[in-house]
Amino acid sequence: MTCIPTDIEHGAPAELAVRGPRERRCYEFLDGLGISYRRAEHAAAATMEICRQIEKSLGCPICKNLLLTNRQQTDFYLLLMEGEKVFKTKFLSKALGCARLSFASDEQMEQLVDVSPGSLSVLGLMNDPDKRVRLVIDRPVLEQPEIGFHPCMNTTTLAVSMADFREKILPALGHELTVVELPVEAEAAP
Image 1 (cartoon, rainbow, N blue to C red):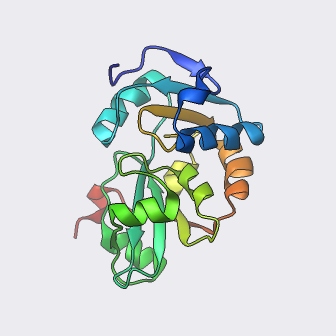
Image 2: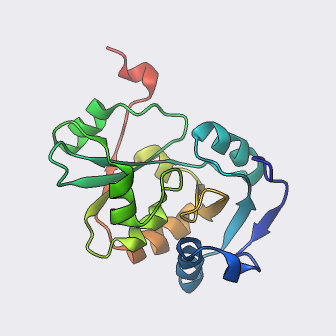
C-alpha cells in the first residue's frame, strides 16, 4: 500500500469486522451521528510530510494533532492545528494562561485517549469519558470547509465537512473546547 491513496471511498470500509477495535469504534461513532465522510486507505502516515501527500488525494487539509501536558502532568490538552504550522509551546502556553506545556508521553496517550503515537485524532476523545483532556483548536482549522483526521489508526484518513465537525462531532464528544490563534512562524519571530 502506498502513502498516496488512489481510491477514495465513502463511509466505513466493507471489511469492518477485520479492523481493530479502536478504528471500528470511530466508524460506529460517526455512523451513529449520521456523519457523511470520505475515506482514504494508505500506508502508515505518522508524519505531516506523509499527510501532505494524502491531502492532495483526499482534497482536504489534515490537521496536526498534539497531546500536551503541563509540567506537573495534571492537565492535558489535545491541540488541533494546521499541518504546515510550526508548534511553539510558548505561544500556546500564553494563550491558555498556563505554564509551559510539553508533549505527553506515549503511555499517557494510550491511557487517556486509547490511541497509539502517530494515530492521535480528535476522535480519541470519545475514549476519554472522564474528560481529562481539554480540546484546543487553532482558529484557522475551524475556518476550513472540511477537516481531515485519522480514525484512531494512521493507515486511514477521513474527510468530514466542517459543519458536521462543529455541529455534530464536537457536541457528541462533549469535551471543553478552547479556540486559540497561534501565530504562523513568520509572525512568531522576535
